[in-house]
Image 1 (spheres, one colour):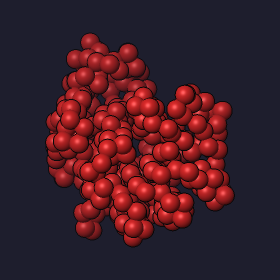
Image 2 (cartoon, rainbow, N blue to C red; image 1 turned 120 degrees about the horizontal axis):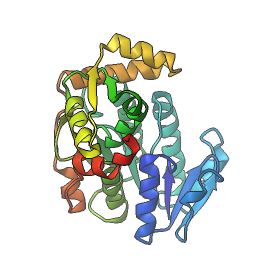
Image 3 (tube, helix red, strand yellow; image 1 turned 90 degrees about the vertical axis):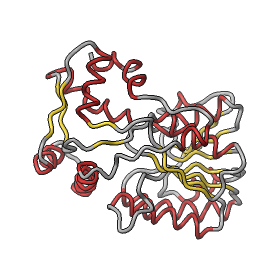
Length: 284
């Protein structure tokens, strides 16, 4: 039995889908089973629970021999994930696959990277065999700009001309699923990217080609981007972390492209062109 924590998000739901498609028995840890009903299937069961309810976590871990661990938010990553790992050890889990972030191993790193590294160290200290999956930026983040693209034909960001090795969450999930289901990935960390590094201007060009409409990226100063995010109601801690990350991108430190997806899964990662064609309708 494989327990998936973070099962309802973009990556977690894809991990559940791919595991189930391979015939693996999956238990999805969810807050609201009614909203997670679409996850259920012949090989998938739901375990209702919450990080604050230790008994629900223990019940979900009972009988699980592997764990996929994904959470969001710096505080949750640094405080909750280590507690989950502690309970996983008590339950006899034999392998933890943790979703981390590209650059988590950098020193001193940025806030988000340091948070994930704190959780990674807790996994290492537990003695449970582990695999860390450290992806670059997600292709699906482009969907956050649907509103302004539909209304103005533009999207905005504080990334300047910096590039990222954007990756499809389907490929992120594929790496995690391979680590969960095949031997040889214990105690390894994989930094994974798509096949090319792209600036947001290049993303705009590719979206334009896929949709048949002109889409423009407008670079904005970090201060203005921060003010906009705060007005949207985003927590200041998250805004600060995102702006810190944008500085890394602008400086060119997120432009790496690795071949880890193909090395781990045996197939090449999806291109942004392919992703854009398949999702073009969302931007029209």
